[in-house]
Image (cartoon, rainbow, N blue to C red; front, side, top):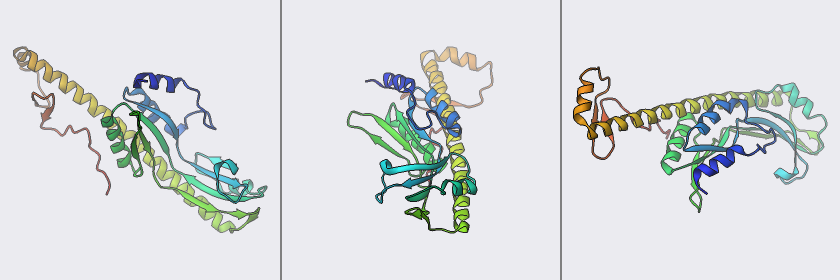
Length: 249
């Protein structure tokens, strides 16, 4: 199945997540990514604080009951109220933003990876499937996990619960800041791609009819001097690199 058909089918599918829709904090960046011809998102979560009850000793998703979940900063009393009726092991978790994006080409994936890492999602990675499907996972390890009870008995003090709540909220705020930086980085490389495309068109015009273009340019100011080359690349006095993001060490 070609990329365009895959994208069309994916974006027409019903959202099968628990919430059933894209999280509010990701609306703008998801819409931007899906508007680009070389990308589409397959899943996402803006980040969340959750309280889960493990009904079995083994920590596994099937044996978990969600007591509380929030995609926004939490209030300590909400956690306390959720703990009142538990019978198993309760664990408080903060999980940062995660987003999976299918890419048309490896260059597209590398560009998105640069934007993600520069925004603080340093655990992001690219995978290529056996059939050539290219995916990027935007993610980080900016998480928190703390057990609160065992067999229904609370093991932590109210003071420690308050500390965990403050810590989770701090991580959520940093998570929102990273989402904002990621969005800005994507907008930046989209702008650069547009500049690159327009410069390449100008170069083709020059090679096709240099005399006509030279006459037209003589009648207007040219902000950025462009030197066309034979291999469809460009050089200018300004930095027009597609990769302007410094990768953290």
